[in-house]
Structure formats: C-alpha cells, structure tokens
Length: 397
View 1 (cartoon, helix red, strand yellow):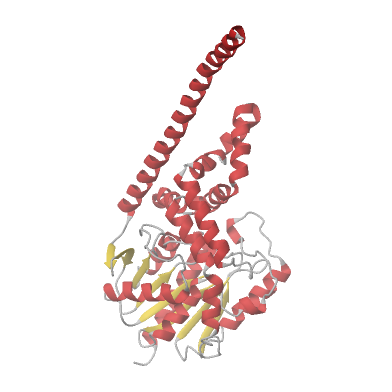
View 2: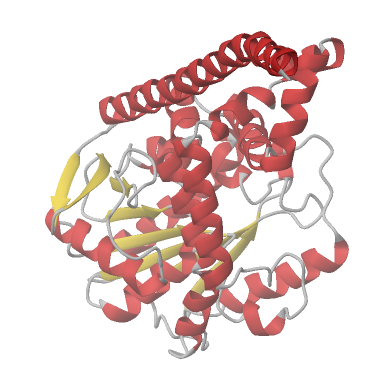
C-alpha cells in the first residue's frame, strides 16, 4: 500500500510540473492578448480624436462636425446606415468650392464617441440629433438635405418636421419605407433583424471585443495568416477555433476596407480603417441595422411617400446603374441581378415624384456605394447637389 501511495505521489509530482508550466503559459498568453487589445483600442480612439474636425457637445453628447465652404445655401450631407462623414469626402470637397457644406458623425461612428442609453436608433431619434447639431452650429435655414441609402428617410422626415428650414433635397440611391411592405420575402430589402436578434448580436460583439477575440479574428482573416495556416498546423488550429466563434464578422470588415479603401484619398485611408474596425462603430452599425424595421414602420405611419409631398422644393434623385447593380465600380465586372434591380428601380421612381420640381438621374456604371466612394461617380453626385443649389439661386425670391 505504501508503495502504491508513493507511486501516485510520484505521478502527481511528474504531472504537476508540466501542468503548472502550461497553466502559467496560458495565463500569460491571455494576459498578453488582453493587454494588446486594450493598447490597440486606446491607440485607435486616440487617432480618431486627432482626426476629428470640430467636436461640439449637444445635451451632453459629442458630435464630430465637418464644415467647409461658404454660401447662401447650406448643404447637409447625411451618411447612410452605419457610415461616417468620411464617406462624403469626395463629394464634400467638390461641393464646398461653391457653397457651405456640413457633414457629421452620428454617435459611435467616425470620430464621434458613442452615446449612452438604449441601443435603438430609430429615424426620429436620428433626426432629433441632426436638428440639434445643425442648430448648435447656426445652420437653421436654407438647408439642402442630401441623403444616401437609408438616410433618405432621415432627410424626408427632417423636412416634414422642420419644413421652414429645408429648401431643396438630393436623394442618392436611397431606400424608403414602402420597401418593407412591397418587398416581402426579398433577400435584400426585407432582412432587418428583430430587436431580440439585435440585442444578442450586440452582446456577442461586446464579448468578442472585450476578450480580444475580434482583433485576433481580424489578424486571422489577413492574407498572410491564411497562407501561413496552410503550412503551420498550430496556426491552422487557431484559425479553426476563431472560425467557430465568428471570424466571418472580421472577414466582412476586412473585405469592406479592401473594397473601399483604394478609392479614398490617401490622406484619410488610416482614418477610414480605424473608423471601420472598432467596437463602437461595429456596435453602431448593428444598432442602426436592427432599427430599420421600426424606422420604416414609423415612417409608414406618416404617409410621406405621396406625390408632391415636398411641394415645389427642387429634388434630384441620383440612382445607380441597374446593369452594374449595387457593386458598380467598387467591384470589377459587377452585374446587377435583373429581378432585384427591377425592384430597386421601382423604389427609385417612387421617390422621383415627391416634388413638383423633381428630376431623376441614372449614373452609368455607378453602384450604390461608388456614388460616394469612387471619385468618378462622386462627381455626378456633387453635380446634382450643385444643380439644386443653382436652381435655388436662380428661382424668383
């Protein structure tokens, strides 16, 4: 019996040493990952604060505002779902040579810090923020509102609430609330998640960022890591483990940066990377996407899609090329799906009758995002905005 006990004790001693080494190594690795993640996150936020144009505080909430140019009319650029003011860089630069232009970052996006409170970002709350920001910088009249994608609803609701301030509008390949009823079952227009699903996504996202897993997944989605994982079994195991916890989310962000980044001015490339890959921005994107169903239902109750609802305000609807689809010049050889594009064309025509002075322009070769991000297409968007300003200048006072 004594010999048996001695053997067991001997075995425990032999196993305990290596286990302690492995445990210490694991703890050191986890601590290293957490420290690296915290340092990287802090560095990103520091760079974004440095890139901010003008931070203004409204009711305790900070907004980054970019204001350029001078003129009788003020153009207000409202970014689409989950996007920042950086998406307007080409357009704002061109339009500001002729008139005053303002763009801003919603909370959590771009250089604006997140806003505490409920995750829901319904269209009326966005419009409230927009109005407060514009009021704070003295932009209270002769506004030309420009919306891209889902922010078209923001612009139309703003005009409904503050009609005396808005004199013209440009809708750039925008969505509208009728889509949620007209496109039942469509994979592109009716995929807005429920509140429960959105809350679960936000909880998961928070966990992935706090643990450093999101940053690890971003590294693992890089081309060099993929190549190395084919040659080194250890890296392949790490990659598979990260796949299991949701590496696809990091893949999507990297793909977006790869697609859009080369079309941006070099001076803002790093800012765009930082704006796109950080916890606050990804959470804001999830929140805005998860709020779309409620936004469309809210807008439907106001009946703002009636012909001539904008009166005689000049309106130009800028649309993508249906033959190139949503990708346009952002994707080589992009082609539009005929069924989907026919539906999108109908939605664009719906909006082209909202004013007595309206015009629709289909930009050949352009896609949904390239109307802002590709300079060649952004020229057409800027021209539409300046044409509205010109119409206002030439109209009888």
